[in-house]
Image 1 (cartoon, rainbow, N blue to C red):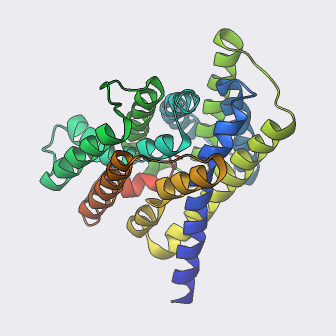
Image 2: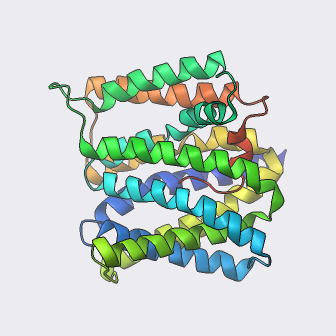
Length: 294
């Protein structure tokens, strides 16, 4: 019982770390180009995990590269989107990957989408509209990019669910982080601007790369050995709540009444979909143990 409580508490702390990074990144990319930040952040996280458990076979590299490309797309869209929207919106919209994952899985496997998932998707869509669509019915570019991010993370999880059982967790994740870093730095050199962060942005790279991408991930993996993947996913649903809370405290971001309603609908949809897949053979819980989309 004590170990269960410890695991849940540790996982809640990890969820706080994942959520708080939206504020940290939001402030950092004001001074450092988004792709440079993504590249350096994941390079640091990758080096830590590679030192702990380096991949020892070609198959890990092959599957890690394939899934790493999807992870890069997700983080590229998320970080570029965060430069153009609020940290609160980014955290909540990113959380929609939970809703999108079983939908993408059903489409990929050509199976029927479960009714509970469909209801959750509809509720999430309405909540998204209330949260992001302005009085002129326009959708901010940053919010749209973040929706793409959530879809990319969903695809990433579905692909992971098909290859994860073949590999050890840490080496596979290390390769994914390394691929994300290489692609982001390459993008920065070719299309953006490659900058080496200093000062506060450098601290943000250390916090997000070392403490979150590596540290919080290891906490998550350990916690899952104690409480299982389904309960882990439910605790991690706190991430967008922490994102909104830290954005309100640090950045002074506030939701309108309509925004609050939309945010609550998104959170309800996330928890409902997680509960719906709790006892089913869906890819979301299994994949959460391999590469967190945070």
